[in-house]
Amino acid sequence: MGSQDSQMKIVHGEFGYILEDVPHFNDYIPSLHTYPNPLRSNTAYSVVKQYFVDVDDTVPQKIVVHKDSPRGVHFRRAGPRQKVYFKSDDVLACIVTCGGLCPGLNTVIREIVCGLSHMYDVNKVLGIDGGYRGFYSKNTITLTPKVVNDIHKRGGTILGTSRGGHDTAKIVDSIQDRGINQVYIIGGDGTQKGAAVIYEEIRRRGLKVAIAGIPKTIDNDIPVIDKSFGFDTAVEEAQRAINAAHVEAESIENGIGVVKLMGRHCGLIAMYATLASRDVDCCLIPESPFYLEGKGGLFEFIERRLKENGHMVIVIAEGAGQDLLTESMQAANQKDASGNKLLQDVGLWISQRIRDHFARQNKMAITLKYIDPTYMIRAIPSNASDNVYCTLLAQSAVHGAMAGYTGFTVGLVNGRHTYIPFNRITERQNNVVITDRMWARLLSSTNQPSFLSPKDVNEAEKEKPPPTQLLDNGNCEDGRQSGKQADSNYGTKN
Ligand SMILES: Nc1ncnc2c1ncn2[C@@H]1O[C@H](COP(=O)(O)OP(=O)(O)O)[C@@H](O)[C@H]1O
Ligand SMILES: O=P(O)(O)OC[C@H]1O[C@](O)(COP(=O)(O)O)[C@@H](O)[C@@H]1O
Ligand SMILES: [Mg+2]
Image 1 (tube, protein in one colour):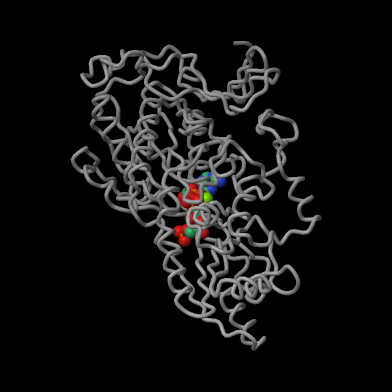
Image 2 (cartoon, rainbow, N blue to C red; image 1 turned 60 degrees about the vertical axis):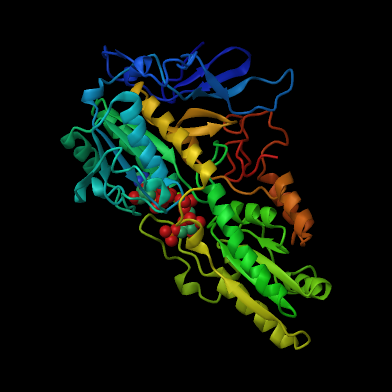
């Protein structure tokens, strides 16, 4: 490997190889003592050939390549290392969950506690109560394998969560005062930004404290990673609402079922729930503008679909059409404690607009049922495959912290578990790219109008990354600018 960037720990190798590495204690603490990994004598793991990850193992961000394309960006492969930087008895770990709920939070908590205990004989783990503010305003919860044994069967987080309340200095004071030396932070983009500044402060103070993030987002809008835990569970649960809407709609003449799903800025839940269901006639998402009246508008489409089929189902993501909701502007600039914009209820609004339209037209009597399962799809336990996924994420985080890595987020990249620098997952958000094949698949499955003029397509195209995956979005000159580009993300990969 060649030169190293002092700011971002970027290592350049041959043939355009780039490693976007994560920090390590060795970067700022000299002459640290190391210990053999206790897994060497663990009866379950010691029989595995090549159980330990080679120090040079890295994972490419882009897997679609041509014979002459550069090797591109890589991330450090997650997993256990031969040497660890903590003696088991010396570890005092803590876990905190922040931001909105997501299926699988409890599973990740469980597997961090069990991973630390069963793999590394670490038995001092604290739960921080109620998000970041719990570091300085509340007591901690003692977490043992027994305490967390069956929490994966429950929705929510046994630790509680919150928005707002991030005071970096006070959080790091609390970490230092309590003697905590491993911090596991489970949360979304806001939480990971918070984790990044905690790491910076820890490093500034020269503390041997590992900061490990586990990315959480129900919307699946964290870039770089293949998908976020709990997303599949949420999409599955959304099917129940869509089914109910369909049953209601098809049981009555000109029945319309409207289902509002989560997605402030990103329509991935709505898109996948629609693609999975096949009962949906129209899916509306924040990324795709639409209009109601006139030729090519939503009302015209509803009329046509009702004439053809006698019923229809509309799925709308909560962030869709916000620009159209001008009536109640007084709430438009309200924000939550974390600074996230509060949205108007687009489901209620669109339901009323559809009712008004058909009442005014007086040519077709409709019956509309509005179903709002918003919180039901996230306040549930994770499904079986998300449980396994959560387990591997948690174990990756534990292996990384024990091996002395810090300032990283764990994430699945092209099917392999990796350590990703915080900035790569917080610098922008993923979303549906409406000029990509996945959205085309949706349009073709619902046969809904795209609501796009050629001008809109051009606009969307400008925001898109280059047409092949050959250039790495994060590093090609033009790729950094757009917040709306496709990544190697599950949601947008096609
Ligand atoms: N830029 C930031 N710097 C530090 N902390 C942040 C930042 N953005 C959000 N946070 C904190 O992260 C936590 C969760 O953020 P929030 O946006 O509510 O949820 P999510 O992590 O799911 O995006 C909150 O405690 C919030 O104060
Ligand atoms: O009502 P709350 O708790 O603020 O959460 C609702 C919002 O959180 C989200 O689920 C996004 O949260 P995450 O992506 O961080 O999980 C949005 O889709 C939704 O609008
Ligand atoms: Mg967020």
